[in-house]
Structures are given as structure tokens and as C-alpha cells.
Image 1 (cartoon, one colour):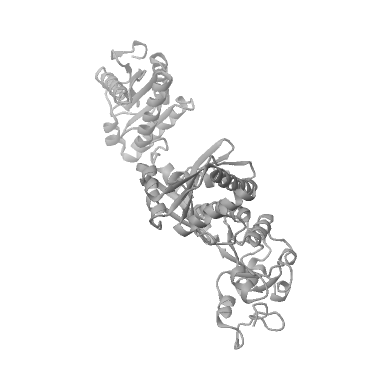
Image 2 (cartoon, rainbow over the protein chains, first blue to last red; image 1 turned 180 degrees about the vertical axis):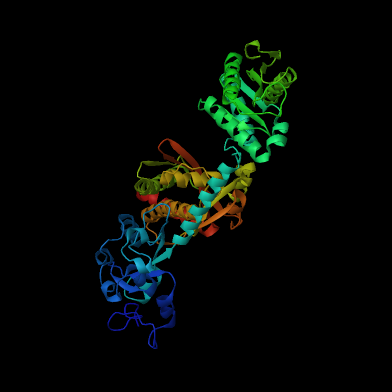
Length: 345
Length: 200
């Protein structure tokens, strides 16, 4: 029995039952849950299995005995044709991976044959069998094996989307939607290195809501959360340059990293922050020295020479913030001399 | 294994022919010019290989392996530093996202890249030397250089080593091609090359 007539009845239909005359390994190919095509040396289809027929929506006799290049309405891709020809010439097996090619063959989800969106993601192997078949049979046959990788592709794309989302979420403060402390630490590290390379100043503002604990005690935590969101929104309005980095540093503490900004510029942004905070006129009846929510702000700017100076910059701004608190709050102080800026007192 | 300058030149030329075929196949896939450069074929014994690799032997690599048999038996391996294998796939598909892991589909794409390159080189050699070779389908290994090269290396065997560089749109990835030969295949190759050089 030759390969050409083995798995088919006279009508060219694959035999799936009563296969008494068919060698059993070929019956297994009929039932295999992957696509199998066998081509003769001239490129004619001599065998196609059920999996393949179901996914191209055709009957066996439409394929068997015909040139593969002529059987489909939407023919196999040019890269498939080239790879098949080369493989038949060299005798070396070849493959077409999903990532590097459009789907090589017109195979679809069985209930949506012909729908462009339902075309299967395919991994195709082309295996010339000349070494075995040319000796025992009349000619060199080639096996084409198709694996449906659609579920794998979908799973990987889903995982990738989720990973990107989580990557993003890990850097965002859930309450205010601005950067969190981790995002700030990463930016600080990046910007210190950039400032070292370019010899430019790196500015920092540290801001703290005045009398926030009494605010929470008096108005309740939901109101405290609203207050934090209002402050964050106001800061987003003030901090506008694309490389400036605003983040919530702790409970009621915010930071703004200002690349390429000398002391003067940092103080200017600091004054604007205090001014805009006052303009919001958020009532705060549980505090001393006023009746609205205000901010204390510490400013610093350095030209770093070493990566460790990230810590120096933080400490200077923090010292200045402490100074602003000690001097009566609702004001801006700056390092290194830690003087109160009289213009906003 | 003894191959004189002339024989090495001839072998380098055959490899370059194959690599050129592969480059045009890659350019079709990438939709952009893919340049492949191969400086020179070097031959090393097992011992020389370990010395040559030195600490580089512990480098993590993505390797694509195929086996060829016939007049010459050879394990053929294409390898890249682990993190560069993925970059190569992204260069081919024009992707930008840096990912730290070789996912299943990228691994499959890397198999194909290895399959194209190794088959082109071996087809060029087989064609010029007029020999019949059978080839296997590719397998991908994520391992260290040492275990990729020495795992199935016979004592007394030789390795043909070729540095290879992929370039697409000003991005480049450097890799290594290695053909591991057993003793019998070394003799066969020596004779075949000698005949080829004499005939040329």
C-alpha cells in the first residue's frame, strides 16, 4: 500500500471507521488534534486530516489530488510558499513561528470559517520526508504540521497587559492618583544621576499639611481623604513641567522633584504652592492661627557630585520643612542656610 | 583537526554564502534590511574551547540547536546572551517593549531564526561540498555557554566557531555560531574541503 491511497476511501474522504485495510498509524493521523497535510514532490495534497478540514471548512476531495497553491480562496502566504520550496530543495525541516509571520494558512475557528477575526494563530512545521519515503515509495513526500497557538498567544497578551497594569499601579498612590513614595525614590535616583552627568541643579520641595491630625479628628477621616485629594489636585495644577515629579511622600506629606531648577526657581514654585493652597480656602476650624488649610514647605536645590547626595537633598529639604513648621507654619523655608523667606510670611 | 589558511578561507566563504541567504530571508520577515556579518571561522579543540570561553562559559544564553547527519555529523548551535535573544526577536518584528523573560511565543520565534540561519549555512556547505545531509527541527535551550557546548561534546572533538552580528535599523545583536564535530566528521570535512579547494 502506498501513502497516496492509504487513509482514504475511493471518494477521497478520510476513513475514520472500518479502517481494516488502512495501516493503523495513519488512522491515528486522521484523528490527531493538530493539522496534518502531506504533499507529494510536485506540491499536490495526498493526505489531509480531520482537524485541518474542519478548520479550513472544506471537504477532503476539494484538497486531495490538487495543488496546495490552488485549493484555497485565500491562498497560503508567500512566506509559507518560499519556506516550503526551500525545504523541499534542501531536505532540511523548517518552521514558521507565530510571532514572525501572519497566519500562513487559511484556517479558522470551526464555527467562524472565513471570518478574518477568527483566523487561527499558527505555528507551522515543514518536514521533508524524502529520506524515508523516496526509498520505500515512489517519491519524496513532505509533511506540513499546523499547531493552533491562539490560546497561548491570547494568554501571553493578557499576562503582558496585566503585568503592565500592575507595574503602573505599583507607582501610583491609590488615594490621590499621583505618584507614590516608590515612584518618587526611583525618579530621585534617575534625576540625581542625570544632574551629575549634566552638572545642572536639582530642586526639591517637601510639603506638609498644617494641623492635619486635628483636621482628621474634627472632620473625620473621609473628609481628611477629600482634603488630601484637593491638595494633590492643586499641586498637579502648579507643577506643570513634563519632567517635574509630584508624589505623596507619606500621610499628609507631598514632594516635588524639580530637575534643572536652581534655588530661585524652586522658591518660586514653593511660593506659588503656598499661594494656591490659601486660595482654595478649605475650612479648618480645629487649628491655631487661622481657619483654612495651609501648607508648610521646605525647599532645597543642589548640583550633585555623587549619587549619595540624593540623601543630602532630602535632608536639606526636610530640615527646611522643619524650620517652616517651627517658625509658625503656612510658610516657605529653604536650605542650606534654612532662612525663612520673608515674602510669604 | 588541521585546516590550513586556504581551507579556512574556503570554509569562511561557504559560511558567508549561507549567511547571505539567511540575511535576505530575515529581511523579508523584518520588512527592513537585516545585515548579518561573519568575520572568520575559527577551529578549536575541546580544551581550547574551555580556555577561550574562560569566565564567559558561565554566561547565560538562549541557544537554538539542530542536529545534522550524513557525510558529516554535527550539532549546530546558534546562541545569544540570554537577554539579547528576545531583543533579536523584537528587532525582527519591530517591537519596542523591553521584557525580561523569554515567553513561549518569543522562544518559538527564536527557534525559527536559528532554523533559518543554521539551515542556510549547512545548505551552502552541503551544496558546495556535494554531500547529502539530513537535519532536525530546532530546539531552544536556556542554559550556560559551557553546558550548551560541552554537554554533548565528544573528547577529541572539534568546534567551528563563528562570531555573528545581526543589524537591523542601527540596532545590533552579537551572537555565536558553533558547529560541534566528532572525530570521524573532522576527517571527512578535512577531505571534503581539500577536494573543494583543489577543484576550485
